[in-house]
Image (cartoon, rainbow, N blue to C red; front, side, top):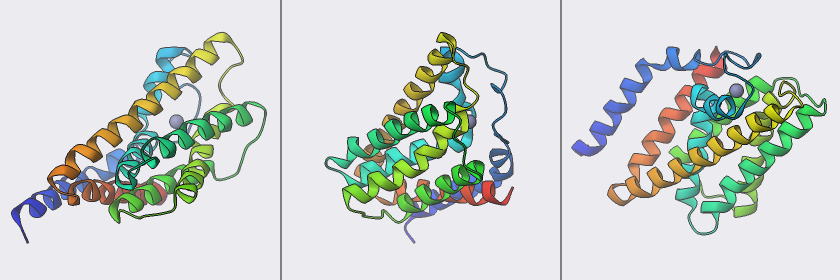
Length: 199
Ligand SMILES: [Zn+2]
């Protein structure tokens, strides 16, 4: 095994050791998580919840692997359907097992990156969109119908787009060195997803 892959593997193990802490870093979605219902609260939330953060970065990494138009269409599908999910959730729609679906999104998106899965663009957008719906639903119901609530939503959407961009950039940069690097990151993300589902 070349030293480079060995080092990547080692990094994976370090992350594995941190799994329990990460998996419990965002238990449930109740209230505003100590942040205010304003722009900064919404902006901070995906950065504090590993479930959102990892899924959103994974979407960017996967988009980089897919290449071409998928690089922006797949993240765009996530952002738009997540927004739709928040609106639906606000209107009273709720689906049982939303938390589990979010954890599953971390696992599946991680696996897609780990295997550099090549899906047709429409299928990739649909799959990403389904997961995004749950990320939106998880918060739609609790966001207050005020201008502050709207600002919270805008902050949340902006961070989501930034995390997609970060994943995309990281995926493209690291793939120049070795396509194994983003795949190893995907495997680590999938492992966190497993831990989240088990918690
Ligand atoms: Zn959340």
